[in-house]
Length: 153
Image (cartoon, rainbow, N blue to C red; front, side, top):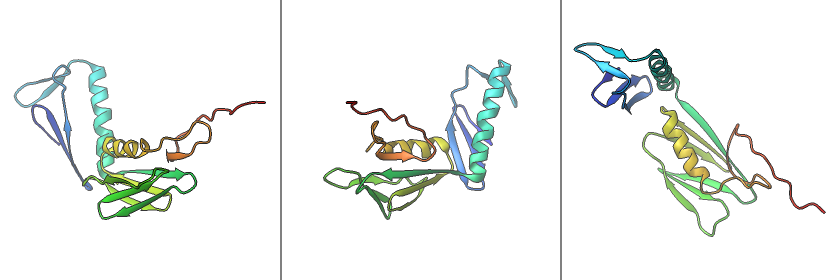
């Protein structure tokens, strides 16, 4: 772990992360040591740091499913093609820090940063959000949805 004025560099078996760090109001730096202004700031910093190190050691895996008639996904080189009810395929370029496996109605996203993997997953979900009446669309596995009732006679 190395740090500079505004970034924190972490290295693990799966890669490295350069995290922006704007903790000047939380940490005071002297010649060779850092001091936290409060115990809460210290515990928050340690928790976030331990989570990031765990992600660097084992990685983050998110699964998306496409629910709906005719919804498909296809991966070609570094592009994901989504067919989710529009007149055309939607092209999404895969960032270099992600590994994507896509087949029929399943998409697996793997990376070393939870925030970046989740951001890419949310960008895919934004093309066809789950419908509130039938839950059709692109869904994160494990996420729960509330279904509204339709018209009552």
